[in-house]
Figure 1 (spheres, one colour):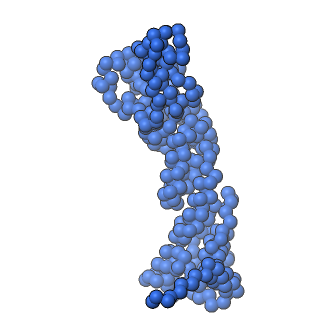
Figure 2 (cartoon, one colour):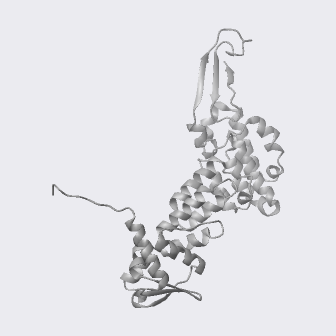
Figure 3 (cartoon, one colour):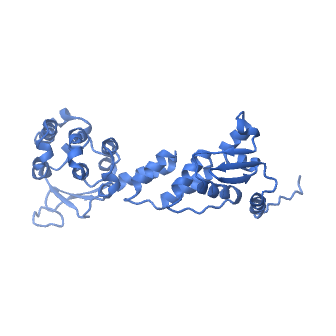
Length: 319
């Protein structure tokens, strides 16, 4: 119609929710009671079904609860159910560190996606190097894919600092192996990965030293500085007590001593992680023939500026 008029009231949905919340609190027109332990929650089947795929399937499928007036739910504590029920009828929720995990558990069980999203946003906004591994574990347990991806990226981008904290030191060997195998670890150099592993071993040396040879397979030792190999790695007692570790050390030494044969040593350990392959380096070429002029570096000179280096100073390379 040419002379039509479309009206939209932004307050309408809020007003309806407010009225529905009042009906629920007074038990008016409620047609189902949810029981958890010794507490009852009066509700409306249509409201629950519209808010939760779990309740939609329960009330509209062939489940026995379809025609029951009272339904007992397990796997959710009563305090979390009260908060989730409040959200269903108001669209508002208050989260803190004390309630976020049980609420996330309940929302995951009852398939209340908006509450899961709220919990994920709460955890993501408080992500730091001390809690990121724990938050990632929650994200995996309760199928919060976006949160898991965010925490995974955060862990790898801040790996050296994450490795210094209690959560990392309390991981088991399988979890450590998954981290060490990743191409996404972002560190200044491979020495940081080696130090993270050694720190994890020494946190419980007697029980963890048996895992050292297996986990060293995932440290890219040939990419470690030759000076570090001589000054640090060769003097590590854990290396001296393991024949396999000695083989890995020898492989790294050959990689540095025989550069023309590096293609023969091609393996996961000799391939740089992504942080080394894809970050930007500024290369300046030139020179004026003055080898004493440090501003140009002299004849046939390359100046390399590594944007990821800790100290932002150009490296002078002469041919």
